[in-house]
Length: 115
Length: 109
Image (spheres, rainbow over the protein chains, first blue to last red):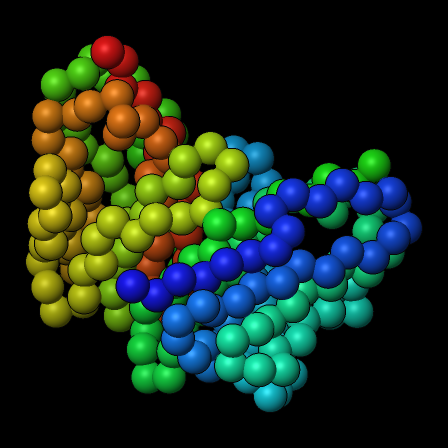
């Protein structure tokens, strides 16, 4: 089956620093990758959609300058949280889908804690 | 704007009971509906995907139904087990996934 990995699974950082999270499709080519954020006891909220080789499309209310998304290859997308603050602490989950395939395959998530 | 609601928010049942989780959505113009399981601090595991042309899907002890006209889906879990304890999320697919807030299920031994 399609496998998506995320790295790191946990990250703790100081306020003001930047954090990069990787999302990889291990056994298929992901033409589209999605980034979600989940606060405790809440549902997943789509942050942005990225297609390989093009700029990400951000959802309303998501700051594109704060959450930098790069999808430079068919197997890797990165989310960089710039100048992180405590309110950015959350569970970040990526998903990926292949060309012509509607099903999204989800990664295991990355828990970010900003002190 | 599509809104997805799941009821109840939390549910606790004794082992062996059959149970139903509910999901409702406001816009019936969806492609598919998907049910996921999420264990604490983990990612999502896809359980069942119902295409818009289908009315139900079954996998083992799980059965999901879809009624687009009424904007409802149910997830039926038969003979519940403690290992079924998790949060169950439904998501409607209409271009992108829109999730409900989930039902936190606890099955007591």
